Image 1 (spheres, one colour):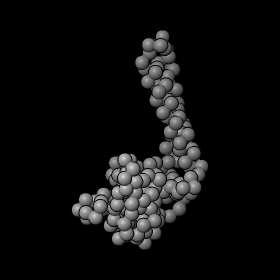
Image 2: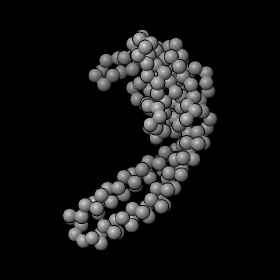
Image 3: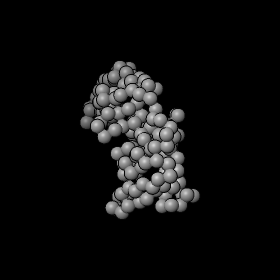
Image 4: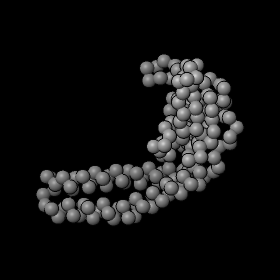
Length: 165
Protein backbone atom coordinates (compact mmCIF):
# COMPACT_ATOMS: atom_id res chain seq x y z
CA UNK A 1 0.00 0.00 0.00
CA UNK A 2 1.29 3.39 -0.85
CA UNK A 3 -0.02 6.90 -0.68
CA UNK A 4 0.72 9.87 -2.89
CA UNK A 5 0.39 13.57 -2.28
CA UNK A 6 -2.77 13.74 -4.42
CA UNK A 7 -4.68 11.78 -1.73
CA UNK A 8 -4.74 8.69 -3.90
CA UNK A 9 -3.77 5.55 -2.05
CA UNK A 10 -2.17 2.85 -4.17
CA UNK A 11 -2.95 -0.62 -2.91
CA UNK A 12 -1.97 -4.06 -3.98
CA UNK A 13 -4.96 -6.26 -4.78
CA UNK A 14 -4.27 -8.22 -1.57
CA UNK A 15 -4.27 -5.08 0.59
CA UNK A 16 -7.44 -3.80 -1.09
CA UNK A 17 -9.19 -7.13 -0.46
CA UNK A 18 -8.12 -7.13 3.21
CA UNK A 19 -9.41 -3.61 3.80
CA UNK A 20 -12.64 -4.30 1.89
CA UNK A 21 -13.25 -7.41 4.06
CA UNK A 22 -12.62 -5.40 7.23
CA UNK A 23 -15.08 -2.72 6.07
CA UNK A 24 -17.75 -5.32 5.26
CA UNK A 25 -17.35 -6.92 8.69
CA UNK A 26 -17.45 -3.59 10.55
CA UNK A 27 -20.45 -2.41 8.51
CA UNK A 28 -22.43 -5.61 9.02
CA UNK A 29 -21.84 -8.20 11.76
CA UNK A 30 -19.81 -5.89 14.00
CA UNK A 31 -22.56 -3.23 13.96
CA UNK A 32 -25.10 -5.85 14.96
CA UNK A 33 -22.87 -7.07 17.79
CA UNK A 34 -22.29 -3.58 19.22
CA UNK A 35 -26.00 -2.73 18.96
CA UNK A 36 -26.77 -5.86 20.98
CA UNK A 37 -24.20 -4.87 23.63
CA UNK A 38 -25.71 -1.39 23.89
CA UNK A 39 -29.25 -2.78 24.16
CA UNK A 40 -28.21 -5.24 26.86
CA UNK A 41 -26.43 -2.53 28.84
CA UNK A 42 -29.42 -0.17 28.45
CA UNK A 43 -31.68 -2.78 30.08
CA UNK A 44 -29.49 -2.70 33.19
CA UNK A 45 -31.01 0.59 34.24
CA UNK A 46 -29.65 4.06 35.01
CA UNK A 47 -27.45 5.03 32.07
CA UNK A 48 -25.56 7.73 34.00
CA UNK A 49 -23.81 5.12 36.15
CA UNK A 50 -23.79 2.24 33.70
CA UNK A 51 -20.15 1.49 32.85
CA UNK A 52 -21.05 -1.25 30.38
CA UNK A 53 -23.28 1.12 28.42
CA UNK A 54 -20.64 3.83 28.23
CA UNK A 55 -17.95 1.33 27.21
CA UNK A 56 -20.18 -0.07 24.47
CA UNK A 57 -21.00 3.43 23.18
CA UNK A 58 -17.29 4.31 23.12
CA UNK A 59 -16.55 1.08 21.23
CA UNK A 60 -19.32 1.95 18.78
CA UNK A 61 -17.80 5.40 18.19
CA UNK A 62 -14.37 3.93 17.47
CA UNK A 63 -15.90 1.36 15.16
CA UNK A 64 -17.85 3.98 13.21
CA UNK A 65 -14.71 6.13 12.88
CA UNK A 66 -12.87 3.15 11.40
CA UNK A 67 -15.78 2.54 8.97
CA UNK A 68 -15.53 6.17 7.80
CA UNK A 69 -11.73 5.93 7.44
CA UNK A 70 -11.93 2.71 5.44
CA UNK A 71 -14.75 4.03 3.25
CA UNK A 72 -12.78 7.17 2.41
CA UNK A 73 -9.57 5.21 1.83
CA UNK A 74 -11.21 2.67 -0.48
CA UNK A 75 -13.07 5.37 -2.43
CA UNK A 76 -9.77 7.01 -3.39
CA UNK A 77 -7.74 3.80 -3.70
CA UNK A 78 -6.13 2.69 -6.92
CA UNK A 79 -5.26 -0.98 -7.18
CA UNK A 80 -1.99 -1.64 -8.88
CA UNK A 81 1.24 -3.52 -8.90
CA UNK A 82 4.00 -3.26 -6.34
CA UNK A 83 6.71 -0.73 -7.15
CA UNK A 84 9.55 -1.78 -9.43
CA UNK A 85 12.71 -3.20 -7.90
CA UNK A 86 14.87 -0.53 -9.55
CA UNK A 87 16.67 0.78 -6.48
CA UNK A 88 14.59 3.96 -6.23
CA UNK A 89 12.78 4.50 -2.93
CA UNK A 90 9.01 4.65 -3.43
CA UNK A 91 5.92 3.96 -1.35
CA UNK A 92 5.39 0.22 -0.97
CA UNK A 93 9.09 -0.50 -0.54
CA UNK A 94 11.15 -1.82 2.35
CA UNK A 95 13.95 0.68 2.87
CA UNK A 96 17.16 0.30 4.85
CA UNK A 97 19.01 3.47 5.82
CA UNK A 98 22.15 4.30 7.77
CA UNK A 99 22.14 7.33 10.05
CA UNK A 100 24.69 10.14 9.69
CA UNK A 101 27.17 8.09 7.69
CA UNK A 102 27.40 5.33 10.36
CA UNK A 103 26.64 2.18 8.37
CA UNK A 104 26.31 0.20 11.62
CA UNK A 105 23.42 2.38 12.88
CA UNK A 106 20.68 1.28 10.48
CA UNK A 107 16.91 1.24 10.30
CA UNK A 108 14.75 -0.90 8.04
CA UNK A 109 11.15 0.15 7.52
CA UNK A 110 8.21 -0.04 5.13
CA UNK A 111 7.42 3.21 3.35
CA UNK A 112 3.62 3.08 3.22
CA UNK A 113 0.38 4.49 4.53
CA UNK A 114 -0.33 3.83 8.19
CA UNK A 115 -3.26 1.67 7.10
CA UNK A 116 -0.75 -0.98 6.11
CA UNK A 117 1.23 -0.88 9.35
CA UNK A 118 1.88 -4.26 10.93
CA UNK A 119 3.79 -5.70 13.84
CA UNK A 120 6.28 -7.43 11.53
CA UNK A 121 7.92 -4.23 10.23
CA UNK A 122 8.01 -0.61 11.29
CA UNK A 123 6.05 1.63 8.90
CA UNK A 124 6.73 5.25 7.97
CA UNK A 125 4.28 7.31 5.95
CA UNK A 126 5.53 8.91 2.73
CA UNK A 127 4.28 12.20 4.24
CA UNK A 128 6.39 11.82 7.41
CA UNK A 129 9.63 13.82 7.60
CA UNK A 130 11.76 10.69 7.11
CA UNK A 131 9.44 9.28 4.45
CA UNK A 132 9.39 12.45 2.38
CA UNK A 133 13.15 12.79 2.78
CA UNK A 134 13.97 9.36 1.35
CA UNK A 135 11.15 9.10 -1.21
CA UNK A 136 12.55 9.20 -4.73
CA UNK A 137 16.17 8.70 -3.65
CA UNK A 138 18.34 5.91 -5.11
CA UNK A 139 20.40 3.30 -3.29
CA UNK A 140 23.70 4.93 -2.30
CA UNK A 141 22.29 8.47 -2.20
CA UNK A 142 22.05 10.63 0.89
CA UNK A 143 18.79 12.16 2.07
CA UNK A 144 17.98 14.82 4.64
CA UNK A 145 14.89 15.31 6.73
CA UNK A 146 13.85 17.67 9.48
CA UNK A 147 13.78 16.49 13.10
CA UNK A 148 11.07 17.68 15.53
CA UNK A 149 13.58 20.14 17.04
CA UNK A 150 14.06 21.78 13.61
CA UNK A 151 17.53 20.36 12.97
CA UNK A 152 18.33 18.37 9.85
CA UNK A 153 19.29 14.69 9.96
CA UNK A 154 21.15 12.95 7.19
CA UNK A 155 20.77 9.31 6.16
CA UNK A 156 22.20 7.13 3.42
CA UNK A 157 19.95 4.78 1.43
CA UNK A 158 21.43 1.28 1.73
CA UNK A 159 18.63 -0.81 0.24
CA UNK A 160 15.18 -0.38 -1.32
CA UNK A 161 13.10 -3.37 -2.39
CA UNK A 162 9.38 -3.99 -2.91
CA UNK A 163 7.49 -5.18 0.17
CA UNK A 164 6.58 -8.86 -0.11
CA UNK A 165 4.49 -9.20 3.07
